[in-house]
Length: 363
Image (tube, rainbow, N blue to C red; front, side):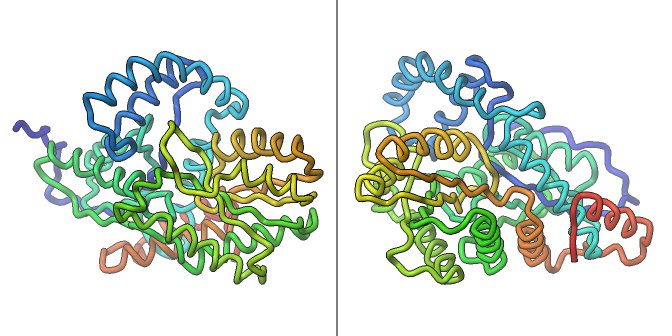
């Protein structure tokens, strides 16, 4: 095996520490060719689709990538912003804010964001960090609940990159934070703020991204962790069990996925006489196609068409100060033991504090 040449290294250079915030990914553009490239990488991951490779290759390239990209591109176009994909916009902003908040606490840490599929890719970001002299990297997935289809795939990408690297940095991974007190509190405050401005609906629907039911049977903890998040959140909100529902969205293919499904549940609620629902997506830390189009457009239409009167979507955590503080606490705990303090560099402290304040840090 041939290893990549190492970047120029100065023996007098101080070792650096970095945090890489990893999200799922997004096409570069809301066009069929860009979506086709993205889906080929995403659906080609054996963690995402556990069908024997030769069979799946024929299905993916013979059917799905010929028909799905144009339809998906139209959906992406409906939520695209002047700055690009909402997922990329929010993830980038979270990384910038995280750097500022860590700096305000006295940590001299480089923070970058990376995408498991699409750009900037995890290998490209790790190459960039190595070139900058980074020798310690904390990988922080944007997935609160662990799943082999998401969190493990991020670890796979880092491991695959490491196979080509001669001088590896120290690596740490955050696997889950589905029951983290700061994360639950950020969700609680987001929902309470929504209720304060819009009132409380008859039902709160907590919609998580779905995965095939087979993964639960094979030992994936995702289903249990989603339900624990929902239970903790309901307790903090003071909701009785009959005032909220846990559902799963984003089915793909004909296999059975985790139930109950989100859209059929919303239709059933409307048909049962429920007039108003609040819908939140706790497993998504950034608004994206699945929340803005699938939930706030498609699911909304389905509920109203079935007889519902008020469908209120609650935004994801995005750049809320409560969430960035929770993210900072999480990163800080996992950085323990690594030298990150810059107490001897008042200028760096001042710059980090100014960045955090400019981007919305609040005591």
